[in-house]
Length: 279
Image (cartoon, rainbow, N blue to C red; front, side, top):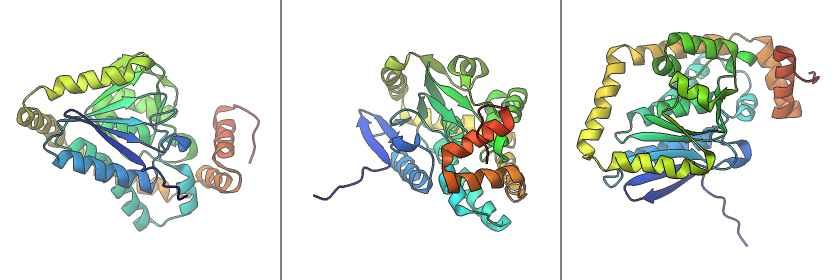
């Protein structure tokens, strides 16, 4: 019997709401090339479908999204500045497709929403989080930069600097609500229904007006220099990624030789004094 792999993005229509489910549960929906391409195709299709008025994005399994796939990153090895710029630019463009989708997008978050996963959540127009959610950017703790600098545009510069400088990865749902990272926090058991209810409330309105209003709000960011800031972050991120920092090189080496869990244990021992794992 031939075993057919499930698609990395599951698509279902619930009336005028299209629900996209990231489907790499074994890796906590970490963003690899296949998943980002699948999301790109799915959000473009939703944007072009006249029957779709609102898009929900969620994750299968135990988490929303644990960030970019560090196994894939380690396997790529060292890249020169040109390749890093191409890779980072492509990653940012994939995130921007959710912001630029003509239909309102809602991130439905549960459990871990970290690093690139937080970027993806912030690229959506709205976010509903379960009360068991955790957010944060761990990039600084192993010498990497943030791929898509949405954060200060959503929560402000002071809060963004604190989150980015500390590398905190346990920001609770309640704190995320206080900071403005998410719109609503609901009990985990109510997450599907609460997110769909919000989507249906939006879908009841005239699509042209909603879509034009989304463009107007996005335009406010553009006028304030959003795209120039995103491009500048990419340039600076290339500098970080090509700096050959010992911590990042060691993290990648351990990932390749002993696996991602061992690399994370080494990182936390080196930077947080947690555990006794060594290189």
